[in-house]
Amino acid sequence: MEIHITHGQIAKLKKKLCRKRVLIYGTGKFFHRIYKDFNLAELNIIGVVDRKYESNRFTQGDFGYKIVHLNEIRKQNADCILICLENPYRAETQLKPYLNKNKIIALNKKSPLSSAIYNLSLQMQKIKNRKNFVLIKQDGTKIYNPKIKNLKVNLRGENPRVEIYEPFEAKIQCEISCADNSLVRIHPYNTYQRARILAGCGNTIEIGACTTIGEACFYLSRTKHTKVKIGQDCMLSSGIIIRTSDGHKISDKDGNMINPPQDVIISDHVWVGARSMILKGTEIPSNCIVGACALVNKKFKEENCIIAGVPAKIVKRNINWDRNLPPGDN
Image 1 (cartoon, helix red, strand yellow):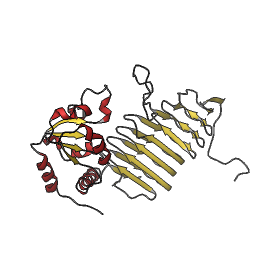
Image 2 (cartoon, one colour; image 1 turned 180 degrees about the horizontal axis):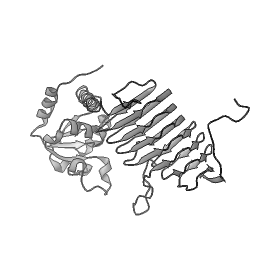
Image 3 (cartoon, helix red, strand yellow; image 1 turned 90 degrees about the vertical axis):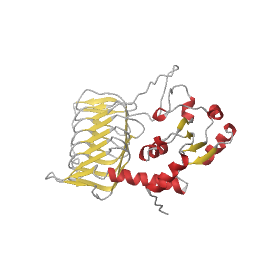
Image 4 (cartoon, one colour; image 1 turned 60 degrees about the horizontal axis):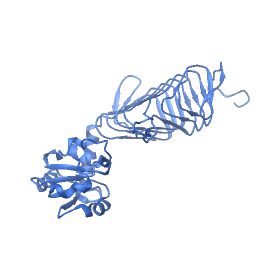
């Protein structure tokens, strides 16, 4: 059921909490969206509680608030604890041993009021981002928020942008998802069978003209400020995975990160074989072929090579390729 809420109802909720000493439990994406869109800074927030703060690497909480550990909750004399999680029930059980007589208010997607706030927030973002998906026709005309057959575009957060230049064709099923300050730019004469492009905060994906994709996934959703650049006239087969990070942090014994995200660069006229995996830090020069099932995870400098294997290495030099079928296969 679709729920509608007015700004008056939001003001009423904030009025209920004004002059209260509020402690926030849960500082994930849900809290960030509500906080920014409805100015929760007006509340008297005395601290934030989140399991991610239990490690010593944080010196202050989200939006600069004081970090409060679970065993310190009773000392804060909070009037209420605002739970900003999708599932508050487990949180209430976790909090119970640490509470005095604090009132718990569960602000989550499952309650009618906060669900409506969240939905309204999403609607506001869609209105702000409605000119951030643009189809650029061959004569330079721009069509904002276009309908393209077999293509689904999802824009989230502040200033995500998708630019597609005609002609473009999505033959079966394609999806583009962009978060804050990310950019996906697809140059003309691209044809995709199946593609899933996920661009997290501040990431850039640029695909050159005359490139075709059988089936590929671009995973840039779990990192920030990285880039994938694919040149002109490339051919990506089926089952391709391209990533600019490992998705999780790996540290040495001193806690220093040893697997930072890195850009991926694929130059002009590269054929990527089926079920290949292109990992962070990869660079593939022009006129190369990536063999089927290869795992590519480093920079190559020589053009006109076949790169294959796990991990990939150069297996043949002085080659080239074209899209024409071999004789007898026509």
